[in-house]
Image 1: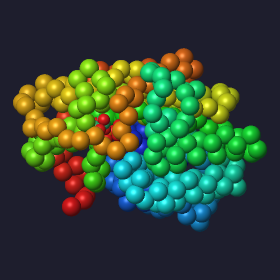
Image 2 (image 1 turned 30 degrees about the horizontal axis):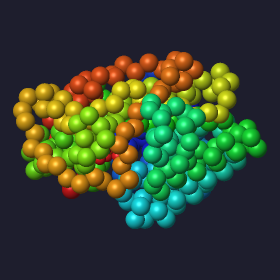
Image 3 (image 1 turned 120 degrees about the horizontal axis):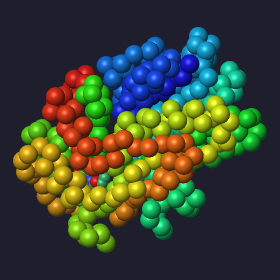
Amino acid sequence: MICVIGGAGYIGSHCVKRLLERGYEVVTLDNLEAGHRAAVVGGEFVQGDYTDRQTLDTLFTSYPIECVMHFAAYASVAESMTDPAKFYRLNVVGGYTLLEAMRAHHIPYLIFSSSAATYGEPCQIPIPEDHPQEPTNAYGETKRAFEQMLRWYDVAFGLRSISLRYFNAAGADPEGQLGEDHHPETHLIPLVLLTALGKRPVIKIFGTDYDTPDGTAIRDYIHVTDLADAHILAYEALKRGAPTSAYNLGNGLGYSVREVIRTAEEVVGRSIPQEEAPRRAGDPARLVASADRAKHELGWQPQYADLRTIIETAWRWHSTHPDGYGDRT
Ligand code: UDP
């Protein structure tokens, strides 16, 4: 059985759905602080805090868990700069509690949601996994710290893990059942589409003076279902004996903020109000993945690589769920 921690969140819920489709048994643990109960489409559900050892002991005693997929974390870069303590508490101290509970209950495998933010300002594009990890924000630092813990937990205790360094997760369940619903929303694609729906007055373009062809920042957008599939492949690789490792997950294609807005306008069939704004602190000009290792070693092949397809799936979700899951005011 697979335990998905943070399985009611954006990426975790898509992963639960894919696991169930593949016939895996799943138990989700989520405290619903940011997650949505309605996003957990099946399997067992336990509401609770993964930073609480008692909760983990009960969970790990109640279910025959072989692998933990760990999605639960604070993820706002801006907030991590004003309140790093909050990020260390959940992402690192919580992670330590989880690893200790896994050790005690002899759970052998972990798949970890890491991030391109662990690299910091890139000195090479596309970014390979052996690029230096020098995060420029506390969020990325907490992800890096947990990756390092995982290395040493394998060396000393034999707990095997794969860290998946996501680039820009985007899009929604192609069947329209799940989507992105953050409070507050800070990500580009949902904000652009909520602006198209009239739920927001204007989309601000953060920085128009980057050293890029149109002056706006370039990112590698990767479909959330493709991310979910990589987790399953990573788990299957660990079962086959793969060593503890880290993989980038991206399409290897960079799109600027203006290109994203233009593509969204094509998808929704109307113009979207936009305005130029100053750069957001800590945003690198370009983040593009080299995901060759995930393709060769895990057999990962993104199915929804095209930006237009990614935005179409997101648009289907937002246009049919303008208030998301409808469980927040
Ligand atoms: N961005 C923007 N306006 C917004 C939100 C984001 O111009 O309202 C830009 C942001 O500066 C970055 C890109 O869009 O260059 C992607 O940002 P997002 O927050 O989606 O993901 P991040 O790259 O920070 O993980």
